[in-house]
Image (cartoon, rainbow, N blue to C red):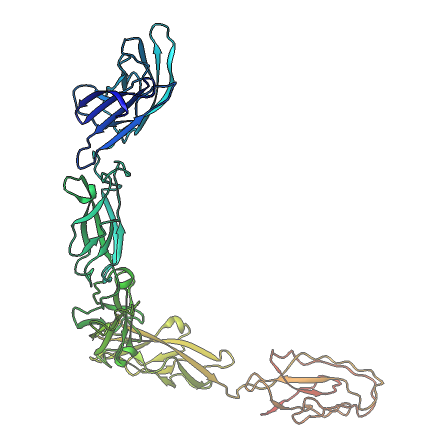
Length: 598
């Protein structure tokens, strides 16, 4: 009852309804009271908001609230935004409304007479949510400002016009096989361009469309987790999971977006190696060299990479002595190699057990569900015969023979045989490149070596020849053996003076004076330790010689003084090693006879 009178302006357009009330206070000398009410209807379950604004200022009479404008307007006419009104406007057409600011003239238009504002284009809140404008009122006649410039906002009201979007169309993730239920795999999140603070337009809920019952997704944060226990990579490795994000809190009518997650089960060492065939048969020639590969065996492991690496071992002694096995790191095969020289004539087959295990074991899977974590197989190796060359009973041969042996004398015997099962006959020969002087001969049937010439130890103490044994049925099969023949010494050489001697003596030399030392050599053995006997061949009263009886030297004296000492030396002796030393005196060159005691 405080209002003397009231007027109301109502405007209804599409989803908005405006009420404009004007009243006069009874006890305030006709002072006006104005109120603008805007009802905005929000579709899709958004509650309407009512905004009130009143002003009781003496100098200003603006009557408006913050304006709200729905985005994505689809009408044919310009979209009504709101109305500016001043109590200075008496309705006589003398008031002019002026609008400035962002988008004025292109996005927003104002009726200068009525103050009605319209939007000329469809607006998108996700592009811009708020526009700031300025309004004032002037007198058309005097251009006098009736209401000063005042700032206000036009807020673009959100509608649910954007679906959730994931940052990727396809995600890749992995999780270890045999993981526990609930193991986190990956988190995928979507974004919604709608207003996060208004309603449920951007309230997202995640769900799984494809990938059950293996995986689940957290509806609030999009975390994907395993949903089944004991997921085995060897059974199924890859999974395609489709995740949906839906706005409006997942309610009917909400918009949605999807993405695909490719999930791979990463390998764990949960599968033991296994032989598909538990018997392997190999063969090799007996001539295979030590270290040569004779065959490969292979176990299978369903795991991959490091978890599939295997190592092999021979567990039987029969195989350990003759063979070794190593792992090929590229193919994971077991390579069997020869450890000792094979001999078909001694053993023709070998059987042994080979065991395979993983190089790297995971303690979680070693004892369950299928222990043990290894496997074994039998390997049978057949040795094949090879036509081998003859084999000598000794290598090398060392034979001794005296130097005075006559031509045709026996020296020694060599013997060779065919190691093959056929035991073919062999024949013998001497490689004449090793016996250029043809000093020896060999019987081609029995291998007896004889001399063709006499041997002289002083000319050559050793003779090194090569004897060849050839298989008669296959002349390509030959074997050589060195024969070292040592020539033994015989005392067949007389002693000789070690050098040429020429002795001078003074005529007044005292009796017993040492005037010369002589020595002798013998080319026979031993080279050290010979004993010689020295004497003067004819009687000479002027000189004496003393035999040292095997000592290195003996003193020689002049028995009496003499006046003349002509000396004629003996002829120069051949080269030889000094064996004994004898001092002697000689007035002339008498012939000397030497005897040797050994």
